[in-house]
Image (cartoon, rainbow, N blue to C red; front, top):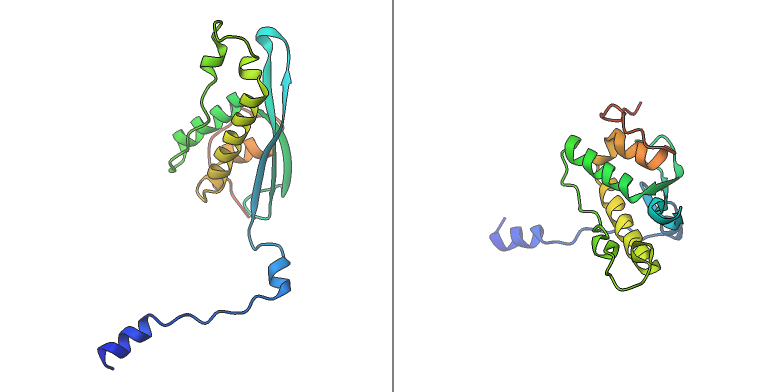
Length: 166
């Protein structure tokens, strides 16, 4: 075979299968959808905090529940990040920043970290964080991620480890 025939064969296009309507509208082979939504602020004065609903839908076999909804505070996202940094072999993305400048007494009015604009910005950042983490195949086997996404309360005394699928 000549060199020009070899190079033409090596760059030949792959045959593609025409997509049918059934292919286009059937559920994807594997999916993991996580939404951080419905922020709610609770308490008064120093005991005030905001939590977020974390909704998950998946058909990945590694997850016990295929749908779940839990409420999580920013501090629980911090806990998850710390656990993943300590126990997994992945580079864990950063969380959206703390609201330190909004907590200062001379900030010039406003509702500080309970301001709707700040809460929405944080919600988007938390959603981005959890989707990056949960989308990583190695993180999907961590017990801490499963507890964070699927258990109503986070047991900070849990025994770290991998989820076993049978």
